Length: 102
Image (tube, rainbow, N blue to C red; front, side, top):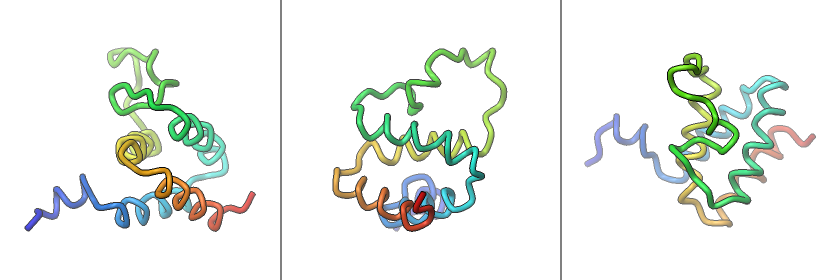
């Protein structure tokens, strides 16, 4: 039986989708506008580096400020979606379209 800590860190697809829909629902308009290009780049690219989208590659850890909750969620989203099938990615896109049709 998986521990509750492991379940949070590595939930199944249904759990990941629930978390991500809720996070997206709670994103501010600015966070949504920041998130969508990251999502497009992540879903269109096979390139991965430390679990962060390429737009964050140039920040040195010693120079970067502490990550925000939004940035931590983005890191988890990138990690989780890297193993998703195209069908699962489309399911997520449809789910966030239902949250924000714009």
